[in-house]
Each structure stands twice: as structure tokens, then as C-alpha cells.
Image (cartoon, rainbow, N blue to C red):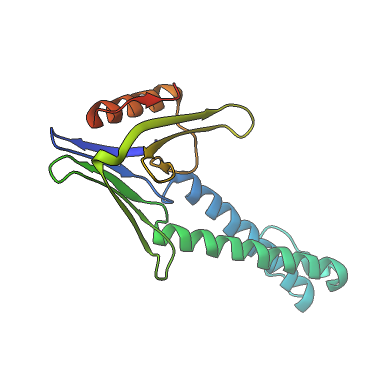
Length: 188
């Protein structure tokens, strides 16, 4: 689900965007951890000729070339796990979209990686919004996303990256937002 929660009154619409703390990231991080640590222990077992695993005994393998390959894959898998853990802890991509008619500003906020761009915030005047645009691409790499068409600027994506929205969810979110902003909905 792209928009985790929606708060709305007559003057403010706030959409909370789910970041990298998704079930799929936890599952793939766990798979990478188990695989990476398993391969690393298998490679080290072949080097030290001591069984470090519970499920098999790779201590009899030759270190060159099998043990080196296992160690390489173990280090790579563990690095992928550490990166995934880092992204989950930082909750990269999480944030909110706030459309405030009271002060006439739209705020798009997302959390990024560490550094000067950790907080990404874009503010535009509501009167610069020309339309809400839906982009739908079917096929192997399906894409379904909503964008804000801003006068004098490029289109701003307002849905999360990752799993594409269902068509009904995209249509409902786009229609709700276009109705709230009193702008046309394009692309459907």
C-alpha cells in the first residue's frame, strides 16, 4: 500500500508514505543474512579445516578454489544484509505529502540516507499545481504511480517506490487528491 494513512479535513490533506520498513525488506534481509553468514562460515571452515556449520561439514573442501568462492559469496551476502539493515534502520523513503489549503502550500517530505540530504523536503504553492497525473505502464516491469504536475517545474512523484499500486487504489488516491486540490486528473 503506497499511502499508509490519510488524514483529511476541509483544509489539510496529509498522506503518510511507507518507506523501507516493509515486510518484503525484512524477509529479503533475513534471507541475505542467513545465506551470507552460511557461505562465510563454509568458506572459513574450508580454510581452518574445522566445521563451523550445523547442517553440513565443509571442512573437507579445498580452500582453493571452492573455499575462496564460498568466502567471497559469504562476504557479498553479508554486505547485502548490512546494507539492507542500514536502509531499514534509516527508513529511507518514508515521509508524507501534505496539501495545506490554509497556508496554500504543498509539502513533500521524505527521509534519505545520512548526510546533508537526510531530510528531503519540497514545498510548492498550491496555485502552481496544474494537475494530478497518473502513470500506468503494464508488462514485466509494471509501474503505477501518481505525480503532481507543477507549473514551471518537472512532475513530482507522490507515491512510494516499489510495489506498484493496484489500479483501483491508484484511481481512488488520484481522484481524492484531484478533488481536494480542485485540479484535473490526467492519465486515467
